[in-house]
Image 1 (cartoon, rainbow, N blue to C red):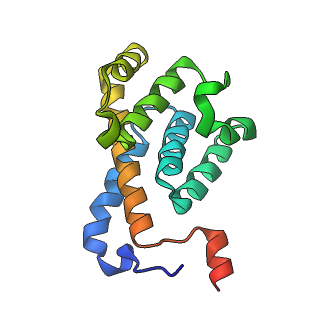
Image 2 (cartoon, rainbow, N blue to C red):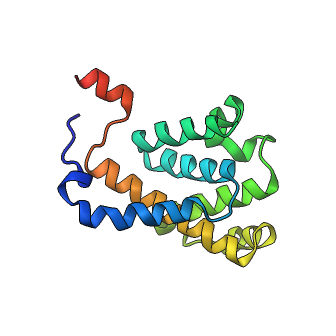
Length: 152
């Protein structure tokens, strides 16, 4: 696979506000491990290798366990995730697959039970930007580090 273009060097003026928005979303008060689980789950659904590599590495830095990372795609069948995490992961899946799910009421009700209104907005922005990053990285074929070594 060959990288199509680098959006950061091709259009730095367009990418800089996008990067700044990401920094704001990343410091929005949600727990770091919750943020990384959400971003990793969206990347799993979308198949974004660059984002998976990045967010799994960051989750480990924040102390995430290997078991929880390995079982993330099957979170519904695991007891390793809290009810708050489950609500966030269900919301992540509902919004990532919004054309199929249409963000069902029961998923929102669980979210509403475990997150304040402000947290719901912050989580939704995090999911939206993660999905957008996945599309940028997949669309332009951005490599994760192991792929760069192989391609060289």
